Image (cartoon, rainbow, N blue to C red; front, top):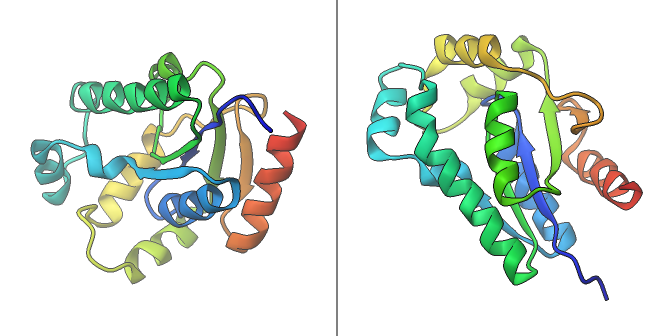
Length: 170
């Protein structure tokens, strides 16, 4: 029986499939899934709904909350997968404060594929092309030694299988 917990971040810009893939990864490894969007403040949600990108100050408390969630799960020896944009290296460092052995799945794709997905998505507070461009401009992609990078054009099943292989090799 495994004695260590997995703390996993499924990251990428909006439209990359963080929630869908995060739930699938969690189911595959017997973890809880948490959508980071559920932990934004009402002020931040209102700001994004108006098409205004969040700044680092807006994200500070949110990231601290997510880091605390990782810490709690790790202390309890439980597995958790959090779907979170984590666009900047600094943001991922904050999350690692709660989970020093954080495993990262980076879902990446072209602007065209991401925009197509956003345009077909149902209700969500993330508003449109301008916000996607803002996220893409902010994105500091993780390096190969920081994350498992998988193209979002892969099927969800293939993405989960590739990430499970990555976890076994770690």
